Length: 155
Image (cartoon, rainbow, N blue to C red):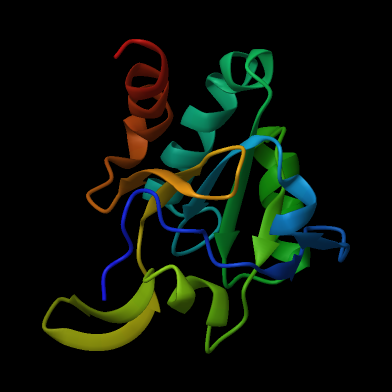
């Protein structure tokens, strides 16, 4: 069954880039943007992370948390954050990616005729009560943060 706007966001507890556990429930009371992405420091994922970085001030002014999740280890997240001065945490969801699976963001992918299991580029906005406010399954990496800001504040 597909996730729907208004559904409660699945609870999770994952380590951030410093190995500290981040629980979704501990962020309740804030709007949260969670974006799933395939791999640190690859072209599309870098564009997406830098778009969130470049729009960070607008998210922070509205007290909106931004969290990136991939299956990369904490050490890789640390390097990615340092290289691009990312002001938000990156969490590690190791294979078989139970959190990404709960968010329907891990599954069969195809690339150059080859099928494999991987992280899908999906983004979710969770409201202050812990429910899905916006769901993006067709993501343009370079402009995802811009789109969220437009959808939240200009509509």
